[in-house]
Length: 205
Image (tube, rainbow, N blue to C red; front, side):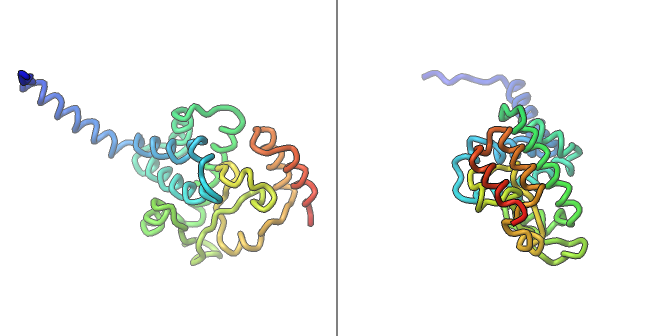
């Protein structure tokens, strides 16, 4: 078979293009957007085992920071990731708001130090460095308790970072917040009517 020669100029253009694309990948929020899209893909989340989304939330917070660190907006990164996944509607809004809330929590608790970022990137628990809970590890809480609503156990919309003490104190208690949130999850098609009723019955107990 006759070997096809690539003109030298075309070879140079290909190399330059490769270098430019590499710089775009490394220096812009593009890599963060793609990573968040993969980690938050609803189809992938649906295949995870029990509490399998917990480390994914840690990783997403890391990539939100990476977007910020590369001159982008964490909120825009989440929105572009959702576009890549074809997400829209109330579920997408709940996930968006949840991720932004966790980004805020991570900043307030001082989870974005270099040591913590290494942990978050691997999906591991970060350590609080600011405020009264400094020194405690951060756990992933289910806003609507897992014991009552395991069907939303891997829904990013239902996950929230909390200092260990706060999470253990909360346990599976149900307050007005949990009921209100369960109603939103049910409206988004994520929670059955039967489970919503169980949440309502646990209010104040």
